Length: 309
Image 1 (spheres, rainbow, N blue to C red):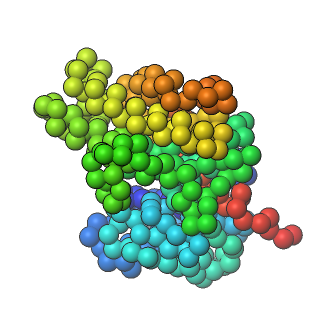
Image 2: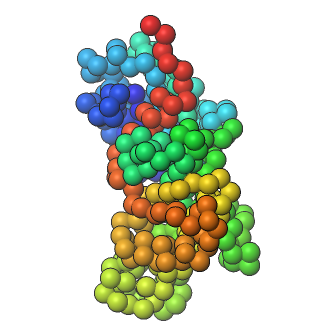
Image 3: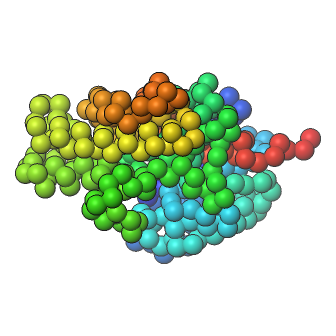
């Protein structure tokens, strides 16, 4: 079983070994609710899954959550779920599962790691032994597969590319650092940059800037070029460090298509210059909105032991 926790929705699924999801459930993430109110939405999703005849066949559970996460402690403090700070989501989910007859092992991963697990299993990184997968949306996150193994790190945050600094004298980032990829390439950063340079389009979001860029607006194009350069620098640095051969980009900003990918690929040629990273490819993610659930299931399969007969 898989649970995907985000600032907009909480989703769940029973996932077969081939990645198909015969049973799904979904609830909106409560706004301005206390911690237990948010958990109630998770419990409702679990209850929907437990009503299925397939419930008894579940052998493990993967939980993917917006971060920060601390997988070593099973806690989450999502930026976009203010009521949860060091919330013990893994233990609380495990208790709910056990109460419904599913006393199965659980694992917690961040949403970037979940997306990575999904894309490596069934998506754009399938067949690649060494991959960086990224979510570029309101924030920028990611995860790593090295030697065909998901590498979440001790706390589940390995591969968090959004907070690599690519501009030492850049603007402050919400993380407390300076010049982070997220501060230059997130959807929020793209819209902010365009507005600061005088763009006044009717839709003040990254999607609006992308539409203006498609129409040839030079300020909008420059905002995406700047974001693409930041992503290219971080992708090249990561590939140089751990020898990945593909970078997969998903998330809302990736929906801009060539408006984003063309500058990323163009700038990558200036950063990925060593022989062992020169053939690095950058491609869009393949699994869309299903990546969170598929990835939570993939992480559970990868990181938890096989069930005993």
